[in-house]
Length: 124
Image (cartoon, rainbow, N blue to C red):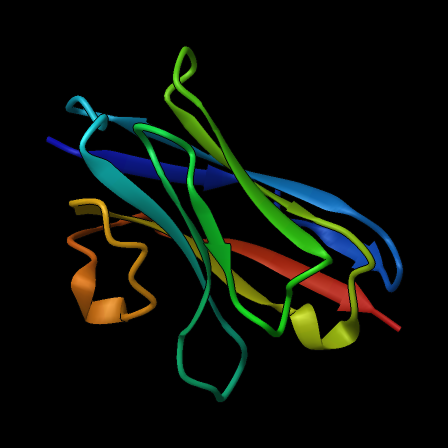
């Protein structure tokens, strides 16, 4: 049974940094892509970034490029989302997701497994 558990979300001031974690369990993820999505109040869920588990190729959305970075630690079976220079518009629930394959898809429906999310609130 695949489980993705996000952690690290909290209240932070604008300009600050946070690192979100996604602990993955239940299978071997070497052939998977791990993605991060977010959903702000009243908005649709949107793609933030993704990383291939096998060779750590990454892709991040233009809206966060230069501020956010994705990485993974195979030994800990954990994927990270490092968020710097946070803005109030980054306030959202952040979700970790997984899909089998090597394509760094930005489509929500391409991902099979989802975590419950972690709340990030950025105050101005």
